[in-house]
Amino acid sequence: MANYSAELDDVFVALADPTRRGVVRRLGQGPASVGDLAGAFPMTLPSFLKHVRTLESAGLIRTTKAGRVRTCVLNRERLAVVEDWLAEQRAVWQQRTDRLDRFVTEEQP
Amino acid sequence: MANYSAELDDVFVALADPTRRGVVRRLGQGPASVGDLAGAFPMTLPSFLKHVRTLESAGLIRTTKAGRVRTCVLNRERLAVVEDWLAEQRAVWQQRTDRLDRFVTEEQP
Figure 1 (cartoon, chains in turn yellow, orange):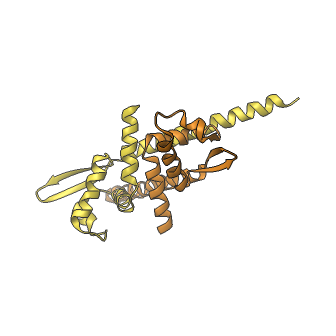
Figure 2 (figure 1 turned 180 degrees about the vertical axis):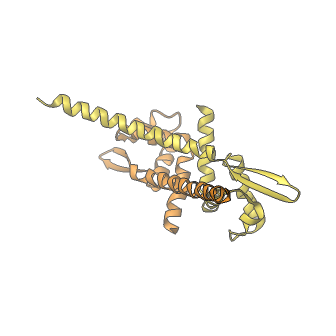
Figure 3 (figure 1 turned 90 degrees about the vertical axis):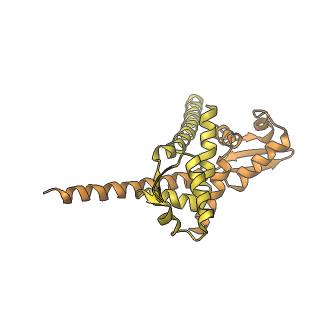
């Protein structure tokens, strides 16, 4: 649970930036090289590489190097921790609704 | 779109902390006073209030004051921006799968 929490921290931080969300979206279409990705964002390559590293250390993307080309691949499973967390919240809300329903039903004559 | 992006930044930053996620979860069960909420987290009240303010400025909770008691309520709609963003990513993946399907089908003799 502590690890799950730290994972969520990292994933949410990684997603709290429009460039990094843009990279996640682009990689949803398929793998891409860092060079090709960088061309789509108006910043220097060193700045862009920082975003790539943040995504990689959060586990949202994986990168591999062949010769001089580093290729990035989306790790979809990592986004599942966000989906799971949201599902958990919906379950809490549902329990509350069920409790309110029971309360109203039991109050009826 | 720019506003939507800024909203997402704020919501993801707000969710990138276990205390703030704990507050969201607790408020999913129903409204609670700041005092009652604070008791559940091992930190000083000023530290806890900072988390409350971060959640409030991200729009994830609303607070109202009656006398000396400040009550917090979850704003579920705000979590929908995260759900919408995830749905958008799944749509991108689906388009990719459809393209791959077409490619494979068209390659068949």
